[in-house]
Structures are given as structure tokens and as C-alpha cells.
Length: 129
Image 1 (cartoon, rainbow, N blue to C red):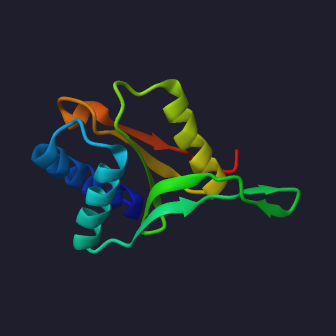
Image 2 (image 1 turned 90 degrees about the vertical axis):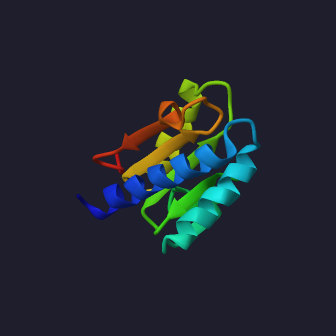
């Protein structure tokens, strides 16, 4: 198992722990804070609301994109607390993966009765495509 997959496994475990303790119904920002805390406790470097610029024509352009959480500089977490995940949520994470050059992201919706129903793993083989 590679490093990104190990991180993803820990993230899923942490999300289960948080969802078991708090359940659905909180704001996304509350889950973000709790997940960042839980992952930090487990020894991971966690960056919250990390700016993600666009590189265009050799310029780095800030347009307001922010990664909810970046774990150990490798895995992007896009968190939601919505009735259901929509195609736009998947597209958002795909965009972040492509712009950042990362290959693995997790889309986690905490507003579900069972957290396993709210976790989607998205991997890119070629982030530059």
C-alpha cells in the first residue's frame, strides 16, 4: 500500500470516529475542525483552507479556490454536509486534484445516516491530463 492509500485509510477511520461521536447535522466547518484535530492527533500534517491557485500562461493566478484539507501534502479532502453529493462536488475535487498535481482525494459527506455512504475516493493516474 502506498503512502497516499495509508493516509486515506486513516482519514476514513477518523471520519468514522467523528461521525459516530457527532452524527449528521452539523456545519461543514465543524466537521473540518474535528477532522483536522483528529488527523493532527494521529501525527499527520494538516493544512486547512489551503489556497489553490491556477497556473495559466506561466502565471500563478489566485481565484479563491481553497482545499478544505490537505493531509501530509498528498491527499486532498473535500468535505460536505449536504443532503446528497452531486456531480458538481465530484467535479470540484477532480479540479483540485488536477490543479494541485495530487493523485488522490476523498469526498466526504458527513450529512448521512452511515458515514460509509458518504465517502467517495477519487484517484487520478495522470494529474496533468
